Image (cartoon, rainbow, N blue to C red):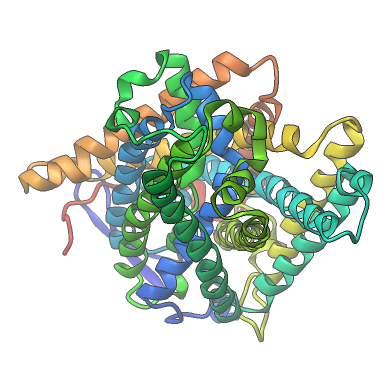
Length: 507
């Protein structure tokens, strides 16, 4: 396996391995299962990674609160969609040049500096592990609520954080097993889960809008185009905090790019799926935001917290609808946990394959062709994190845990998305003016999107660093000594790579 690269002086060199690291003959077959996912599969993975039902259930009320005005949620969503869309475009262009399981980790190493690539990879893996701590909590909480509503368990059991944690750990174990078993099983399950959650969210959202338009229930509000006006967001602090949550809303579409080595037409399909998924997700989110704002009184949006989606379903169609939405959120949470563990395992696999991460993350199961060992290790770390949080703060509840971790996740995602947007603009600087359209879509807008992402991360950390930003600060700070250790201990030539610039845009 070789690769031709061009350095800043325009010289072309053939180097062995992914980044110049020699590939031992015994490891040539140590590869993922290629040519497995088509465009439909990749799009399903992308949209299920974002998991609208989970995102809405866990974050909806927080967006309205942080926006500063009860009906400014859609505006926050739109303001955040534009930069995230151009980060997705940056992923499309970079993946077209270099399909890689490590995605932005590999691109930053190749185009900016190996240290920047390693650090970016660390941020992504750590972010995914934190999410695998947070997401199963919601599935555990809703499962116990379902059991309680059916009369199977008491109110105290349904609200017990230890019971919730145990149930969450069972979901994490299930997801891990499927991820280890194979990418085809994973994708087939994603199709099922996507259908469940999307049908539930879309049908209820459309039904809620129709109900308000035809019967005007007490407390409902007529639609207003002003809900989409960014001027309704109260101040830069509200914009930054809301944008961090909205970035979390859209986060996950890049999973399909981490599966590029397992995709058909690997330099095209993953990037196309990422962009398609962004528009599908925007439609679903906007529709639900509008439906909730129309049907549910503003004070109830704030009071319901993580239950606002169930309250909305109940207001729309009665108590039976609540059970449907609970099931949709549980399936959505399983889907997004699974598709978060997937890229984390692939990124750590890519880093291990390059000789800059522990070897155990680079092993491929001989039958399933998945990074099984790395997947199990990451899931185990997430499991320890679950019980660690509850042990450290026994008085905590699931809503508080989700609220804190979701803000941290939004900041970390903004940081690595921002780095990728800037890397895209830098990588194509030599061909910036070959096409006018490419200057905007491949250079200017990804760069501006990257700067916006960094601003969001900086503002949120500045506002909250003394309260609940510990996970973010630990991840950012811990990455510095870890990258130094990796550089000192590594025997590969990864850290000696000379950054390159692309001299062609590509087809």
